[in-house]
Image (cartoon, rainbow, N blue to C red):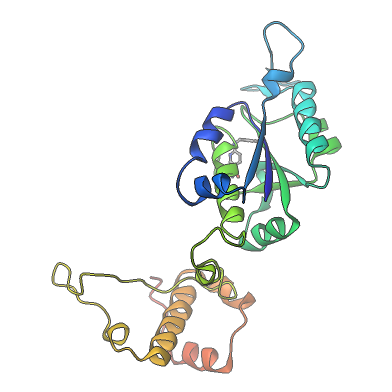
Length: 246
Ligand SMILES: NC(=O)c1ccc(NCc2cccc(O)c2)nc1
């Protein structure tokens, strides 16, 4: 997986991607990260990357020239990569997008700062505007980090057990994940559901599926509409009483 990032804080991105699963993926060459800082592509001695918004209003806007130069430099290195701008105005990011970009093999992420970027850069160079959720961050870098993690962990060989990428939430046809337990068997006087200790793998799989279905119904009922449910799933859901929302 090749990921390009345009950011004013390359050291922030680099540092955050040196640890854990993603850090090992970089060491093993499963993730190649290419960073480009618009400030390095400025023409003035003050290395200006932002300016006041036309029409007035608070804050600053990232100026088009250095940002465009940074995007073009990564497009030259990764000509097939879609250019994705992270902003609250974008299409909601989801697991399907993560799978699509992993399958494509490369993506260029534009992390904005300030109030955003000059719209002419979006018109000319951005293929897709994407949002991590309905909230505003001080910059797109943390949204980019989340996307890089979500995409890289889908890369074959990155996760120890390939199934777990499938079995996470949104892996089993978009249902929420079931509860998990590990040792000790009794913790603060609380035990583990007996079925998980039974060794009956069929019963355990059924319990886990039913827990996922119940949780999804209670917490994210809209996901059930899109889920691929079996007849047994539907019978189970009908058998549940009114949702308690938890
Ligand atoms: N929800 C998100 O994905 C998200 C992305 C970026 C961001 N901050 C930078 C930024 C960029 C553009 C406009 C803007 O208002 C703020 N904050 C939240």
